Length: 286
Image 1 (cartoon, rainbow, N blue to C red):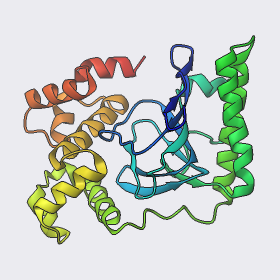
Image 2: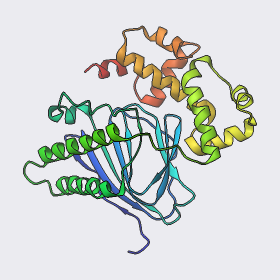
Image 3: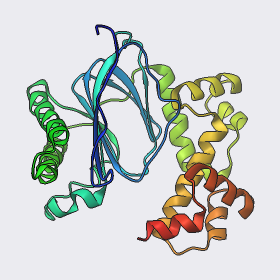
């Protein structure tokens, strides 16, 4: 039906070790808030324009642009001023274990080079990228014999295309030209470095020459989080990293991430992650 949204099923392989989904959205659409997850993400915009918030940076995403997201990186997609006619995208999520058997040890395909960011393929290369994405969709939809192996092979081919382009690219695509987006990028980047110092809204607003009320409103508009919520998420994300990668005591991790006491840390961690810190550490070691 003309004017209606179109969303394909979310096709998956091996209990969601790999998923892919097509979405055609008419009119505006905004994620409620930024989020992060323990798997990789590839977002390709087939039509329209979007705004993408990634780890403190804000990008304007155009048709033919591809976003790569490493595990545990904070991200959110939002409306742009030019997307009133809607947009189309293909979204892929996959775990490292799904692709590991097919990776060439000589090519550092993962994690994505240069952290999570936007890749702007030249027009002449976009058709090849889109063909691979539609082939992946078709394999997952039809599920013919050997489709999982074909999906892995196509995904590796896509990752190699991304890697080759990154080697050749002279510079990363610029961030959003919107002054509001640039200001929030600066503030979010500052918070990423200084979150353990417990900065307040008033302190940060004064430092960046903006009123606290305006900062609160604009920050929520771009990130989907209120200022204090975003700080809490940064602390929890750092705690996850330390739980995965170190043997530090939970008490030590809580203190290093800016929590005043262990009870508050445990309660906040479970509310956001759905597991206690010790449960999360145990599962991440499996």
